[in-house]
Image 1 (cartoon, rainbow, N blue to C red):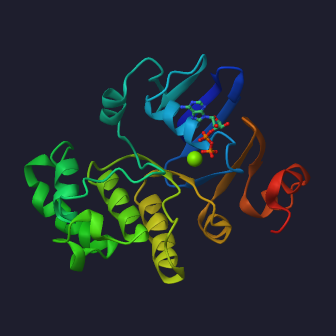
Image 2: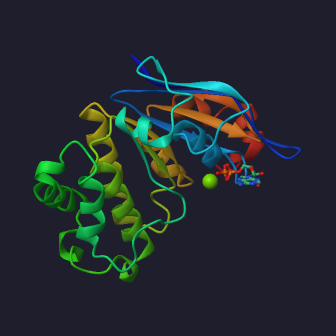
Length: 236
Ligand code: ADP
Ligand code: MG
């Protein structure tokens, strides 16, 4: 079943069409990749999907419900959560408190502390739980962002370059986490530059270039697609 669907999405910044009739789908139980060169429009599409930017045309559906006119908070109540490409953590709060702030807004607010402890374990952040967020490495900081998104028990999870700054071992562990989230029924939409991660973990990949989708398919097909190779993946 298609659970997240954006169609015909157009966004212009002045004369620059950042997105031009973009469609994308993500299924429950799948990790869906969204790749493309810098400036392709990936983060702008995330903004549109989560309600932070209104497109000049296009629709966003969550489980068949048209949420195009809803703000970010209402969409979050439909089970949508995202991380940001730039870290948006509360730097002076501990890792645990960063997660608690999110958990207290979500469906598990009555057992927020317990839920946070589980997420810390799952992400391998327990040892850092009491450290201020701004003392973490970039890779660990991104995991905290992912943890905050998980704290609201999302059914649709949008991740914007979550593995940036991670080392090889962290990325491998992260890949396993993404698979387990999908196996639990989450629809994961992943923007990521680490092609090894994308190709190993995604069921389906959408390729965005200059505001248009130029290819969709399983990783093995997309990496051989002529338009994709021409756009930027020549070294795959
Ligand atoms: P990506 O995430 O794929 O790197 P973005 O969605 O950030 O791409 O950007 C797509 C295009 O839109 C780029 O040309 C970028 O310069 C432009 N853009 C993004 N955000 C803004 C903004 N707030 N104002 C003006 N132009 C923007
Ligand atoms: Mg981006």
